Image 1 (cartoon, one colour):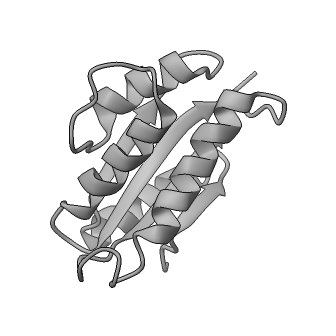
Image 2 (cartoon, rainbow, N blue to C red):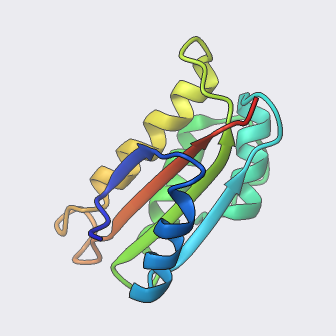
Length: 134
C-alpha cells in the first residue's frame, strides 16, 4: 500500500488494514478524536492534545495560528511520512468549522510535500477520516 499525501475518507472496516500496513512500514500514526459535532473550539482542543504543534497553541481562537503551528510541528518531525487518523467524524457539508478544519489538514498535507518550502524536510502526510457511527 502506498500512502498518498492528503485527506481521504475510509470506512471503519478499512481502518485496521491501513493501520497494520502503516505499522509494517514503520510510519508514525497519530489519532485525532473530537467529541461530538465539530466546532472550532472542540477541534482545536483535540488538536492541541493529539497533533505536533510548533509553537504550541494555548487557546482555540485562531484557525490561522493552528494552520501555521501544525505545518511547522509536522515539518520538524523526524521521518518522511506521517499518518493521521481522525476517527468518528460527523461529516456535515454545512458545518463551516468542519470544512475549515478539513481544508487546513488538506492544505498542510499538500504543502508539506514541497522540498523547497520545507527546507528539504518534505513529508508525506496521509490523513484518514472515518465517519461517525450513527
